[in-house]
Image (cartoon, rainbow, N blue to C red; front, side):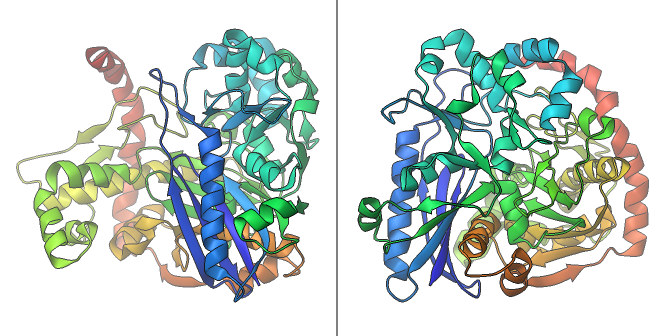
Length: 507
């Protein structure tokens, strides 16, 4: 038998299957376009998304066939993105996704009406345009007929599970990302819903991750190439699913995802809600692992910074990589020096993420001279992104969320040079993992445990998750980075007034 994890992202859907020992046995990917009818709007055609997810599920089901037939499915998805569904299961609007920023006025209005502290204490989240609450408020004010006709409001995990089973169920982690969910009571907040004229009956039933939602409808199972009786298990938000796939199942351990966006996501064993986390926009919500809570520190520039350098300044390395069958990033990183650079990069080339939630920040390079080499420039970009994540780690520790080990996943985790930079700046051991698609794997683990094929999460982690290499901080470099970080942490505040003025130029 095999277990399927479906990972629904903002640009595509990945479907993975694993056997009972956690070995990959099938995979498929489908990409879908982002729709942006106006500046600041970001939507998906949810009909297309579900159709392509079903295509990918079919491809994997055929691939594993009778050799490893699928016995259970769970879904990991982008968090707060949602679709409004009508009484006849028709989609009343496109899916409004995380990066849609149209609800700025609604953020301000609802925060004033409900109160920042009350919102935080109920939901565990700080207000931002990304969250479902404020987009629904925008619909209430600008497209009221859509909400008046709503029979269900479903995030993408819920939407695919509903398509497969006919049951409208969500898990606690996805529910938390909507800012409609009471993180203490583990139920929809009537007080918050009342502010936008909705009742809990239009929302899916919240259940813990790993709860069996139902079985794939028999007619649909045949269409998808699945055997009868495949169970659908509640999955979760893609970040905690990824953390599970990296083996983050206890306190003091965090996932470090290195890709287009950089994320550090620790688990902790009690509900932590305090001013330090609130002021740094670090949410507290349920992990997909029972009994644990979760937060996400992130930098939206992330690995895009190295990609920007590749596209703008790495034409020769790109050519050589193509001719020699090598990675262009390996060729770039071969040029970096061993020691810390004397250049500081403020990696705010797009909106900042945590802790600032600044939608119009200023990126900067400080300390360039005629002696600065190409390799130093490249390394400084990597250092800058890592300094920003170190800033978040310090805030988490101040708030009482300890981190003693980081588990690295994503494309950047394949680079030993980059991992060593991170270990030295963080002054924390970093462990590279055996999996690149951790969110899909985490969802498949939930499917295996929820369906009863594996007894506990801990057993699944022991069988499926395998660390590859430990990068220990090098003492002298860590000391030098500590000195540079003391300067870095002042950069944002020092440059912000200039950035505000400079933003007018591009406007």
